[in-house]
Amino acid sequence: MGLFGKKNEEERPCCCGGSCTPEQMARAEAGQAAPGVKVLGSGCAKCNALEAAVKEALAELGMDTAVEHVTDFAEIAAYGVMTTPALVVDGKVVSYGKVLKKEEAAALLKKVRG
Image (cartoon, rainbow, N blue to C red; front, side, top):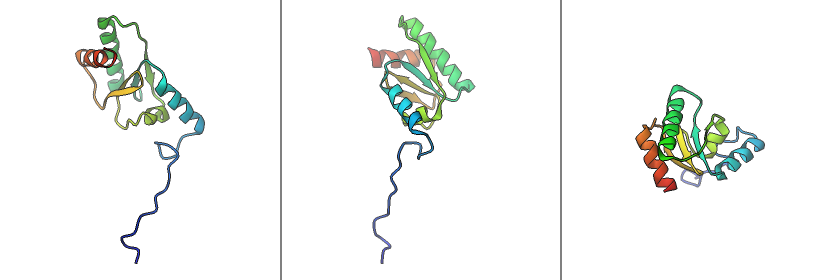
């Protein structure tokens, strides 16, 4: 009887379950290695509010860094983020699923880039 046997597991080629192209995955993985500040999200009001708070925090801290807004789902999924908006600093996801206030964003930027 095979009731309690090991399940056959299928290998998935990428984090999105195989729905993206190899070109999309290569671009997403290359983007992860690049230093900088990114807001991940579809471009909704919450994502735009996070981007504005991050820009204000960067200005307050005197960091001359551009904020990139990533809307491509394959790139977002490559970071392992399933809830947006998300904030990525120097390739590391530091916040997701929440609109940060300027003070919260500044604290995270100080912590990562400190």
